Length: 378
Ligand SMILES: *Cc1c(COP(=O)(O)O)cnc(C)c1O
Image (tube, rainbow, N blue to C red; front, side, top):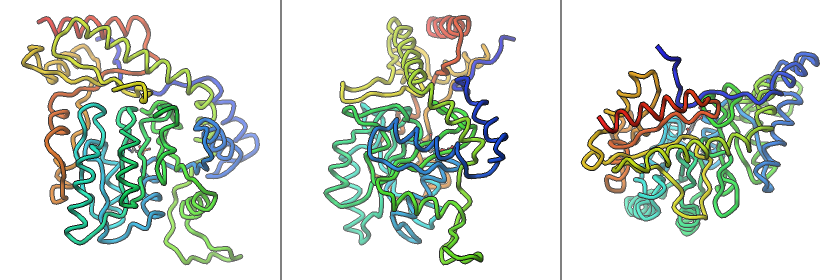
């Protein structure tokens, strides 16, 4: 059997171990220290905005703290893009709040601004104004920032920007993660860069960042003994993980270029295969890091389904994966309200993510190419 080709695997830059050694040499083996501080600063410089970043144990933790800082509590409603990974929605439930799911638009696959406004109006008519909006830059593709922010601002609802998949993406030249009241990043092992596990909350004031750090370190009041007037969390990033992050930030631009080259590889490959569309930017306002290359297949034109392709690749030991199953179709969220049509459902039915790692060699790329051509022409 050929070696396994993964959808997306960690790709070290070279300096990660140096920063980990520094942590050991200085005995900063703790959830604080120079690597944490420097990692935060390097993200702030990269996003190139007046942002303050708090490094955390996971992107999910960042989403949870963002909701808390937006004042989301028991019984509140929070709007969330339906087409996403469950981590976008689960923290809403942690707060005892109710997610209200919204469909995608065709061109970015992200939250549809029209369905969003319809949802807000209907929830207000039913007696509750949503407390926050979780919008996601799926697979690195920016959502329609201008229109989504216009709707959010019109109703004065804060946006939590889930940029877990979109570090390195921009909209009109501005970094994803910097548009909302809060931005969320993830450094899980499968993301464009990794700290093995980790995340960050992007804030727009010192006060918001300090509050995130306070909550993420057990909410300890300023006193010589342990005094608590808030419920706290253990969500801070380890100084060892942050060392990996420092090394990864040094190669982030190269990783973005390489991911984009992977999507280009699939665009070329599918040029001659009718009925298959690769997810690309709708226009030059959008710049995607193309974290995962994603396609939709029209089986009537292509003559094969996404399952035909997925199973055919699996036989060759090549991993591929259906698009995120929309949250409004998930058993855990079956009672939550949903607004929109069936765009997310159709994307799920016909969509597939293809291997997009930045460390694939020419031999692996040609295995992918040959396998897909064989399945498509069978
Ligand atoms: C990965 C991911 C998260 C969660 O990040 P973790 O660091 O794994 O907790 C949240 N939202 C989306 C869209 C993601 O892809």
